[in-house]
Length: 138
Length: 151
Image (cartoon, rainbow over all chains, first blue to last red):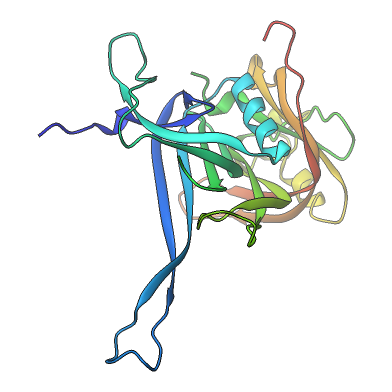
């Protein structure tokens, strides 16, 4: 069994791995409606997916002033950015950032709809970003 | 990798604040966009589309309570200053990378803006340092700082 480690499953922004990434979570949602009717025999519902949506959340230790300003600039712009995910290769010297074009690689457009920059005494700077996908993934 | 203590909030009732929060412990900048599902019958496929229709932000943090005579209160915001901010007064903030003695010298600015202080909560718990938490609600847009020429 060949398993992929979490550090090699990364979120991509504009085709590049999010630097200093520590955690990523991606959610695909199928919005369902119960389409059972009086014609449906029995008590059980019959779910129909009427729309789909996706979102992604990533944590990182981005702490350079230029990185922090870039995130705020992206948020203020309120425009779509290219977001996706992929396996990355762990070859030495690549910082696990080289996309492997895995078969589960996906990309789409998303809005940066939430960010938190945590600056605590005697702690690493932690940046959390949430993206709301807009439109389909490819 | 820069640590959190080197990023500080500067706060004042006048523009271009220079006063940090004395004995600050934590600080967080949080931005949130209100999105609206905007797909229509013209949208091909089942995937939903969204637009940003509103934005807001807040700054939260905490600090230790110093005695009024403590020298670290000099040129900084202490508990008395923070208490005076809990009213409908425009406050000016900056978040900056700091250095030097007591981490009080600005190196470069990350962002600035205006806000109102909506909450100050003080805690005095047995066998712990007295502390307080504050919440600042953003008023208008965040302005991104200008990178130094060598950044």
